[in-house]
Image (tube, rainbow, N blue to C red; front, top):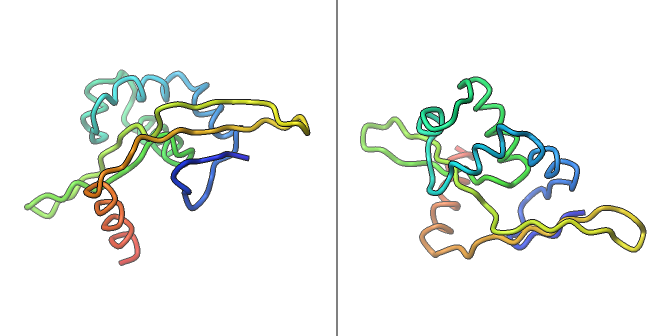
Length: 125
């Protein structure tokens, strides 16, 4: 079970989170993301082949460790940007001896919440 401060649609398991954090490429991506970046920007900062980079970005977003947003461009060629979606992760053992995870998320501004809503609307259309 994962306790998550933002109530995502699907909470990842402790196993998924640990698997993502155990991957050296995923850790490198997290280290490089001091500010939101596109996959192309990450490819220029990381020494990870682009095809591998996309798989790692998918793994990190599915485990809710990265957040994907859409950068709207005037030319119509919108780009996905990725940002770290956690401040702290804690693993602990429950009374029934199962592994549990708590993810602390950064506070979201009104603009970020609106951008999230817009991204969800775009996915539906």
